[in-house]
Image (cartoon, rainbow over all chains, first blue to last red; front, side):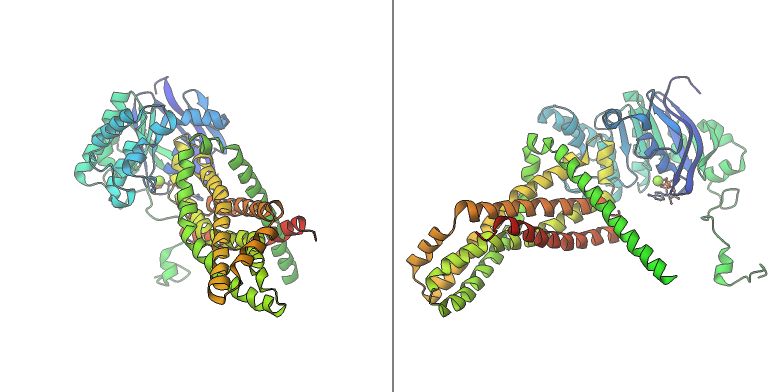
Length: 272
Length: 262
Ligand SMILES: Nc1ncnc2c1ncn2[C@@H]1O[C@H](COP(=O)(O)OP(=O)(O)OP(=O)(O)O)[C@@H](O)[C@H]1O
Ligand SMILES: [Mg+2]
């Protein structure tokens, strides 16, 4: 791909205890692009984002952001790097003891000396952008799941980061919010000149907005390409994923023994 | 080999326990190291002072009153046998200031505020709020843990003092108002017997030490809790058990040093 990559992932391997999760991942995220990572539940997408954020360390390989190897940074360096990143957590992770307003204002208050009036205006702008102007005095417990995710989105972009990571931004949204959030992600990316990584299952929505797509299965990349490449792809698993078919090369089940054996429907020799 | 397995089990527990003490000590050091923000932005600490200190006030006052009443009744019973009912004030005040105030207030504090701190931080961890904070380049030890630590350390001696004051009042109600001990000797004997440095200051030192122990245990258990419902509930239980034992053990040690037969 292009030479000027903001994020470079080279041969990243990772295991929880001794169970390998990531097996030699190579990706590159050029500046200004909006890139999706897709894959089945449990294939290691969140784990990969954690590597970019420096929460987890690869057992082999490295992740480079803005020219620096993440796992070699000390705490100060890592925190300086994270100030330039925004991460939308899969389950929102709003601070439950603060109002919506304080949640969105959190980073502005922690990292800047902006006066309260300006913070107020900025927070209202961010809330307006996600369609939740007017909810600023609610507590997170008073929001629906989809609203909480949109507040979390507003909080993620509070400081206009150069790299935005979205972990399942579309989960639990109604069709209208889905389109709005999808467009918002695209617009934020272009307006801020940011680079965005969207982890999602929502193939149709992301095909509409992203520049490039990686398919991950079982800890390795199995396909990649632009939205048009993917739509036109003849590869069986891509086709299966894009059109949501039951039958195909990607197994739906967690790797384990034969369920029929467990039920006693079959005997050990496999005869029904 | 059941014996070998038993031994291995004991060994694993001991090793695990030593590890946890090590982690706890490191956590305590980190908390002290990152305490700057708790004072630079004192509002954060004040907020926690409200939740830990002020919210514990009612239970501390009520418990102090009850303990004082019982001390008044029991003390009167015993002192009457030696004809020294007038020393009731001294008895009540000394027992409270030296011993019962710091210890009982700390035990109540551990079960009221300590368990709440553990559960709160454990849940923040389980719902990824701590991770989110770290991803926003905000150190959770500085932002979440340290203000709670200082709030606990500041409120503990104050709560113990309230407890003792309420207890003395309870003893006064029973002894003077109800039973009829002479009011003048109740107060004057108390005043001459209670020494500021020897009794009050030592009591304050005790409650400061208890405050540090209880808040460090509570915060560490919360921060170290497995991010699940069972993990948090187990951690909350451990907070109460370990804090209570720590308070009583520290009390033995401190008392041995403070009141060596003089
Ligand atoms: N803390 C952990 N300890 C051990 N194993 C873990 C841990 N977190 C995740 N895993 C395992 O790592 C694998 C990848 O998890 P990950 O959260 O990255 O999946 P994901 O691709 O984000 O899935 P989803 O789409 O459901 O969010 C899973 O099989 C999971 O069982
Ligand atoms: Mg995930």
